[in-house]
Length: 199
Image 1 (spheres, rainbow, N blue to C red):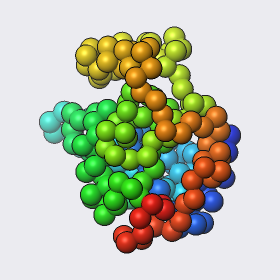
Image 2 (image 1 turned 180 degrees about the vertical axis):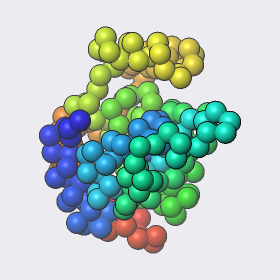
Image 3 (image 1 turned 90 degrees about the vertical axis):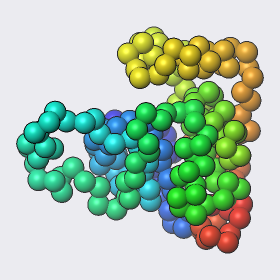
């Protein structure tokens, strides 16, 4: 696992400026936390939103299946919160609820994602400035086609995603070829509850 070029440095710069950094993923809690620890995101991101972990069989606890102390699996700095079970992208209500949870107005937020349907369209529907991360797009690869087949995505979501990508009905507000280009387009400022349009 590695960052795309410019990601680590840009996140560090945003953090230096006092920007509130939030990650939202469909990966379950365990996998999300693992990636955060491996990539060093725990020191860069304020809040992580993900689905909780799978339920365990009755009578079995997480401690029963873990090899390390609980502290080994937990994030030290990032506040990890959970999205509702069974709710996935592209659901604009999840984005709205995350913003409400943190006291952020839609015009204070920027949403960056690499999927026109699951990210760009969702952000647009939520009234949040959308940024398309073209450098991370994998929707046309064989691996992504396999992921669609084995994922939790309902058939109608897969069909709708394909339709929106092919017909071009989703047009991003901003497209990045590298993550660090973000700083050339948006003036980020320290987050404050009464500070609109900045961070």
